Length: 272
Image 1 (cartoon, rainbow, N blue to C red):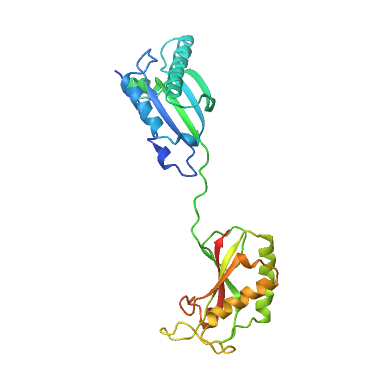
Image 2: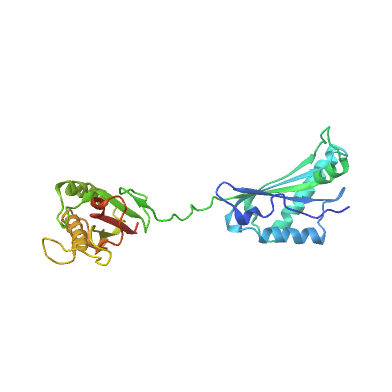
């Protein structure tokens, strides 16, 4: 009885993850036969259409027979079965150069404890097509929040600078903040592709009053002035101004760690 082709790992190709880099496709044949009927041929086409052929790295084709018959005959028959599948793949647009193995393996011996010999033999009259895939590109990273600059930042990442804090009502940089900015400037000189927005923040104003008064300028622009102070300092350290923008966010983005931590500046990466 003819058995239709089916896929042992049914169309895993469309759902491959990084850990899944191959799939096995099996074609089953009648006794002493190596040609495909129309249904089998259609199933081969369906298999190929389900594959992202641009991702195929190599294909290996192995033909098999059941345990009956002489070795020489079985090797020839299994090879003919493998060649039939190769020709079908080539006829459907698979490039010859990626088919790296076409081999008839001959017969598969039955295990001693097989209950259904007929079924086991029918499954041994087959060709296995192993499709190996090129690795998927790494998944797109989601932006995160970090406490320090690092080389593998992506656009949208926020860098919380916990050593760049301000006195209450002030936008002046402290000595400790300048030391931290000196380290940052060295990093930014090394990784010149990074662009960013300097974001200033404040604490301790009522919810309806988003911005606070800078005690030095006596204007309600404290978070913007804090961002500008960092911008100006980095410019003095030879960081190209076109890599940076600055903006005040007032009290709209509290950290929830205490008021002293909200008197801060963050960097939001715009290009990396």
